[in-house]
Amino acid sequence: MNNWNQKIYFLAISRAAQREIRQAIESAKLIEPDAYLYKDAQKAIAKWHLELGEKD
Image 1 (tube, helix red, strand yellow):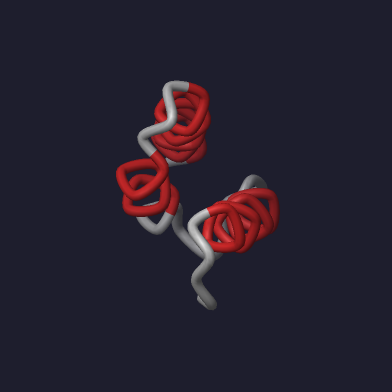
Image 2: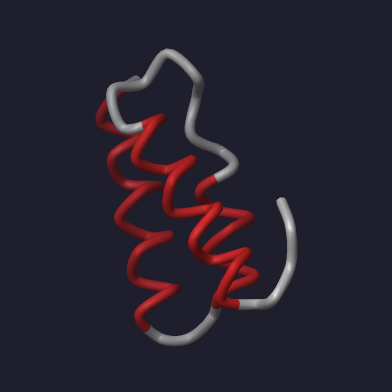
């Protein structure tokens, strides 16, 4: 499953790089809590919410 989570994480990062912040957030939310990238994804989500001027 980590391979799937990694693909989702990199998709989210790619969307954020293209300024598709909301789509990046929704993608990153799909990463499972037991995945090794989960904490990174949660940090990215928080950062993206700040970029949008929102609280998570």
